[in-house]
Image (cartoon, rainbow, N blue to C red; front, side):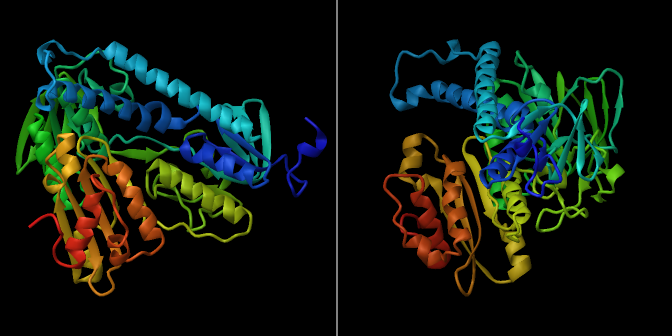
Length: 470
């Protein structure tokens, strides 16, 4: 490597920026840094794309697509299609896994090509701090003026649960690689991970039971949407035990306490899906004096740690564990490295749950909005009144809008509808531009589309009633 290319802009270090971890946040941040003129390297111990691409977001959605297609075939007679014997249609898990692996392989290869094409040096191996400016990767030592930690997270295993005997427990990683359909599965956790797997396995024909500590599933979602999602999943055969504290996993049984009584449920498999925990193993973060907030690396709004030139983005800082959040945090970190003084905002981050109908949310729930603002305006629009939803064959669902009662400021929007995860971007843009309800209503939504219901829900909130629903 030429000497002039082996120095940072200050001339003191090999790189301007070293990113540790090549998940969505890490690799996109490295590309952004390089595009902004910073000499950049990225360190990855396992696979390009991290958890999300290899054993998370992407493979999960590949499974969801297959079960959605399977369900469409099962209901094909409702669409006027003859000659299909629903009883003869089945899913080959082996072929499904092969398709999933093909998608992952393509995208992983794409990440590597993007990094190389943007002149980011890829260093394979586990990165560990030697000191605040030096990272050891095997026998090599990288020096950097700035470091961005993006090491992600791992499955959280609650300490209050004991494990006895030969437990048939799996995590989301193993669940995504099953080459057979289990007869039954207990899912511990009714959050996003647990609910997406409940949806998948129920539609594969597995007997599914979800055991959730909180009183309702998807506790981060607006209560109205959570109730509709539970109803939809129960219709698919999923059983729920909410307000239930798991005490022990023993052999095939999950033992939990509910309403003061102990219950035991057996299943072929038990899926641990209570969330994820920041991952810093082998990093030697404590060794160089980085501060933690429990297991997460502590950062400020600039994404800086207590060591000014070291930043932490994504799941490892424990703020909002979403891939797109990690990427945006990375862009904020790069901007601050360049002296642009950007602050990360967490109040307008969309979140998505992939089932059918889909769930997408941004901003505050109704309960949160009322607690913060007191009086608010709420508008709802039932998807059974939307023409495109009926054409799609999906009558259930709702769009819900929460507005400031005085100015019509958008406080929160919650969608439970076909294509919801695509439509939430409209609201993300609107909130980022600080658009009012009137401006969203004044934006023409094409007909017939599911997105028409967005405008209708805003009219319901702002004017007190929509056009196409009583």
